[in-house]
Length: 197
Length: 230
Image 1 (tube, rainbow over the protein chains, first blue to last red):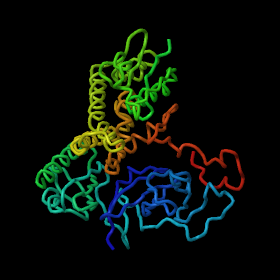
Image 2: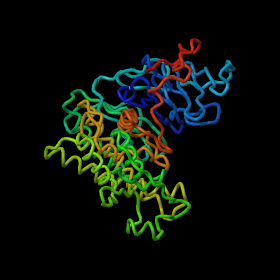
Image 3: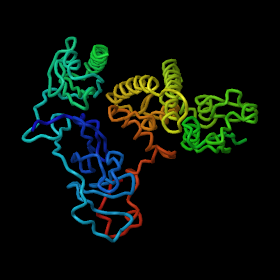
C-alpha cells in the first residue's frame, strides 16, 4: 500500500484535529498533546458525527456531539452520559495507518513513507479539476513530484481527494522562495481549472 | 450610554458585533429582532430605524449605525484602538482591505447560507463559487503571515479585521462549503476561538480544547489521568 500525504505536519499542532479525504474516504486526522499523529475514519461509532469536528484533550479525541472519548488506539474510553460505565471494547473508532515524516502527515501505507528532501513547508491548496488536468499543470496527479517552478525547487505531494479534487502539499528548499512558489502554485491551479472548465 | 444592538442570534453580522463587544469587555443592550419566521426586517417599525432592512443596527449617541464594520470600528475606537491595528498608512490600508473582504464574504457565503438553511429564494451555487475564491485568497494570505509567525490578519495581535471576517468563514459549512482544504484558515479560527472573552454562536463552538474535562476541573482522582491538556 502506498502512503498518501494528507497535510503538512506544521498545519496540525499538538491538540488539533482536522478533516481530510483520500479517494472519497473521509478521515479525521489529529495530533495528541504528546505529539503523536492519528488518522481515523471520520465517523463517531455512536451517532455518526464527524470526529474531525471533535476536540483533543491530552491523549484523547472527544466527539463534539455527545462527548464520547477515544484513546490513541481508537478504543472508546469514556461516555459522559454513563460516567461509571467502562465502554465495551467493541466501541472503537476505525484506525488507519498514519505517520509523520519529511514534514508531512501520511496515511494508509505500509513500510516507510517517501523521503522528502525539501524541509520548508510552503502551503497546501486544493485543485478542483480532474486528475488529467492536474497532471498537465503539475506534472502528476498523485504521489510525490519534485519540480522546478520558475527556477525554484519544490516538492509537491499530491493527494487524490475526489474525482475532480486534488490537494497539493508543497515544500521548498529555501524559505525565501515561499511567496513566489505560493503564487506559482496559484497560477498553475488556475491553469488546471481553466483547462478542465 | 450603552449602545443598543438590534440583534438576531443567527445573523453573522450581529454576531461579530457581540463577539467584539465581549472581547473588549464592552456592554451592549441587546434587542432581539424576529427575523425568521417573523419577517420583522420588513416591518414598518424596523424600516423606520434602518430603511435598508438589514442587520446589524447599532444605536449609539443618537446616531444609527447600519454597517457591521462601522459598528466594529465604533466599539474599538471607544474602548481599545489597538483593535484597529497599526495606524501607519500600510496598517490603515490593510484594515480597509480586510473590512472590504468581510463585506464580500457576507455577500457570498453569508448570502448562500439562508438559501441552504432556511429555504430563502436564490441560487447558492454561484455564491459558493465566488466564496471559494475568497476562502482561497484568505488561506493564502494567512499562510504567508504564518511564515513570519503571525497568527492574525494584520499581524501578531487580533484586530477588527479578524472579527469582521471570522463569522461568515466559520459558518461556511452551513452553505455546503467544507473548510478542510484551508489549513491556515483552520489555525486562524482556532486562534480567534482561543481569545480571552470569545463567545460562541449557533454553529460556532468555543475552543473546548482549552478547558479541562469536567471531572478533571473538579479534581476527581479517578479521571485526573485523562486529558490533561491545558
